[in-house]
Image (cartoon, rainbow, N blue to C red; front, top):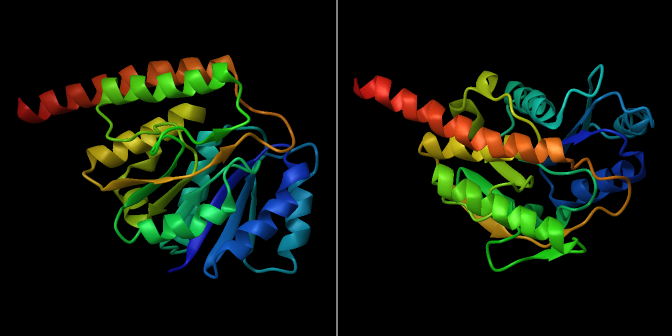
Length: 241
């Protein structure tokens, strides 16, 4: 089945060439779409040069830094238009090991959405400060309790979607970013009755470049949980009225 790995980038020149090579070696049916937000470090130029010699590499350049969530939505729309069967999302910094891609593909035979999980079998995180690990664990617990998600790692950005997931979700309604985007996509998939599975992965902190994590992303995620809960609560009341 044709598969597309969607990777949003902003100033990932240090990582992107090596990552593209490793991802393409991970599985015979894999192609890649880099969604670059006009990185000033020349990330898009690196990808463009590689794409000239390899038709499996695709590039979408946006005019400015528009956010992670909208970058994934743009990539998902491209994947649906081009008729890919499986659509991945993953980070550009090697925190998600491309060697796990075949495991996610195998699990996608059973599940509609497969999540590369840091917390499925204990804790599988390398080189994270304790404060960030605790924050991530508490965030997942918080989301599971408030939204009733049956997922151990609610904020993981390493996923494999069967195209029917993206066809079932109204992508025009997904406006969140960062951790919030991961939470919202999981929640909307579960609300659609789609089958979600988790594959344990080893998560490594980025090898090069700088983290995009900030307090605004955390606060957005905390607020989104309640927004989603009330949105679907009122929706259900209207249906039953």
